[in-house]
Length: 106
Image 1: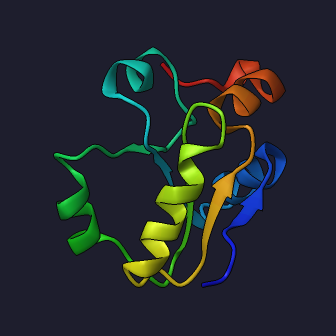
Image 2: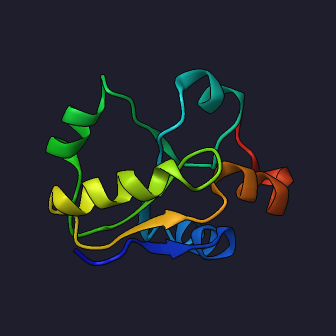
Image 3: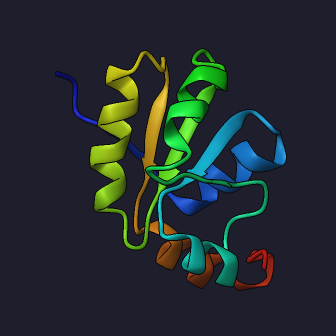
């Protein structure tokens, strides 16, 4: 299996601004409510099945978590589910919020 592609917050911001990727937050719902990347979708065990049915697997997918560790495993899972271009965001939401503190959506 290929290693998971990792991209940083700056690359994710460009993808988000161009609306050229689906951004998935795998943190718990309370953390998502406290702050997240604009346009991100919060996925949990309760919502992932429907997401897999509805999502465009040809569209770029970026996964992030708290620190960029759990998202690597999630990104590998999404690749196994047929998503063509999956990336994990390095440093996770911590990296995003320290790089773009004014863009954290609440």
